[in-house]
Image 1 (spheres, rainbow, N blue to C red):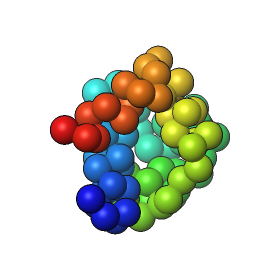
Image 2: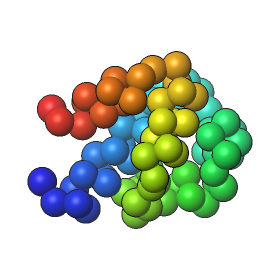
Image 3: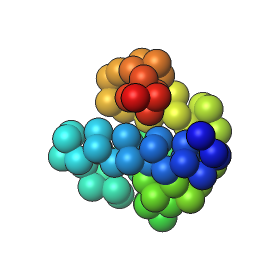
Image 4: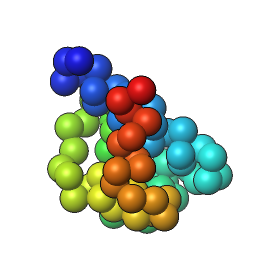
Length: 74
């Protein structure tokens, strides 16, 4: 898997969870302390984020980092 493919899969997973939780990009960005424009870039796979941001994403959805990433490998 290339870096681009991985970032895209992570972005799609985050978008899926955000949608399932009924959050707008702005609301979600507020929860994880990220600008809405960066949430959009993250979901599109255009933003190579820090591991701490992924931890905050998992925390916002009340899941572990492992649970966030486990769907990526399938």
